[in-house]
Length: 102
Image (cartoon, rainbow, N blue to C red; front, side, top):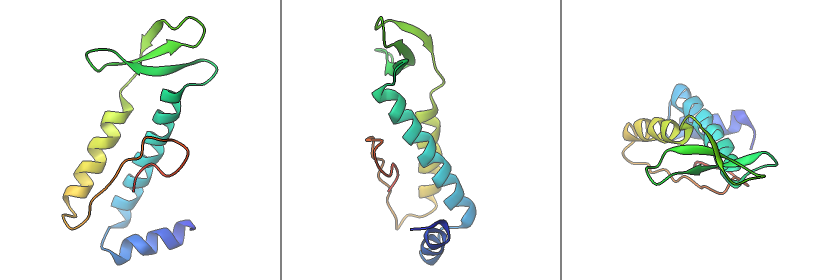
């Protein structure tokens, strides 16, 4: 589905273009976050017992530094938008191999 078709589909069910754009950006943010949780050659994101996200080294397994919690912000934006559309529900897929927000 191309961008124009997707926007037309969202418009038909009453989602504004601004809300659609915000949902898309939140989805992209979450997808990248979940990719980083899976890890790459440099390391991965892991949460400590308090829920704070850390970058963990792929070589040593040690926490190196805290990272901004972009997952929480993206989920808040999705929730705020979905509150304006009570007839709709959203689902966040944490597997980064496909669409993140349904």
